[in-house]
Length: 372
Ligand SMILES: Cc1ncc(COP(=O)(O)O)c(C=O)c1O
Figure 1: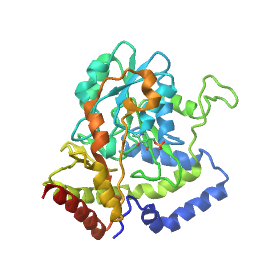
Figure 2: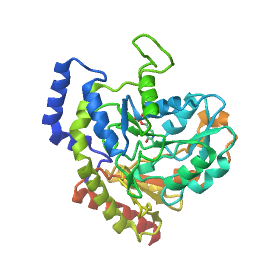
Figure 3: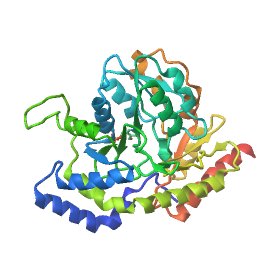
């Protein structure tokens, strides 16, 4: 049985009527960029992230860029972020002219190692970007506490964790800013590019809104330099159709994660991801560690059986060629071993029980073959 890593058609198909109606509404409105569709979505999406203000932007990457720009971070500054994350986290720091300083990760939950952040903070450090990786919140209490003690801003990269919670509070409500991605494969996916900046600070929200549109206020007057980071009305309208289904999507992901946990918990050579009891993990990815140098062999084993799997991420940021100029970077042993051992399995909400069983059997067969 073939099991794709992801099947967006199964999620969007049942909503085709409503999505088409939203499309027609935007076509008829003639308002294609920003406007009331965007404003409505901003409000309801910010509420999910526990924030007062939402600023719809063109992608999760641009959301990070806008947040950094709004905080005035630039040349001469340093920003701490995990090495084991998607490129955009570190890429945006470099794009505003600052130096990314990479932190190591937790070996069992994959998030930034909060205990290691303090020794990276120096006189040039201006901010920390914790990433809520794979859908589980980073350890925000110690991170916010360190930031407060050193006078640092916090930008939560919640690209993979829209709707996740930490100690009963939604991610997005802890930092000065949080940033979200609605890339189609995310737990709430647009039908194109889309992102969101959220904040509880009215002045920062206003600044981000200004930067999103070339720093222009009033029209053709530019008190500051921004960019074109505007969100399309169409994507906002389509996302508004999908948003009410987010809880049901999350429940599906969590159900699959639970079945994987039960099936793989006792398997030799496979380490299941740790879910902290004080967090609501929304399982954007279900990622195991494959021990003994066998990760690529397991991936091939799954591929031969038609089962999709992905390596998030094969190269940690401190080992990326483009970041060498910010080095020398110290060794980050956990990030390096995660890059060699991590494998993400299909966990999309609409996956059937039969499909999940096929994944479980294939992984179990592989692990038993190596151990037996
Ligand atoms: C952790 C993280 N940060 C930022 C981004 C960037 O989001 P986008 O692809 O919408 O630009 C992503 C998306 O893949 C991500 O996973």
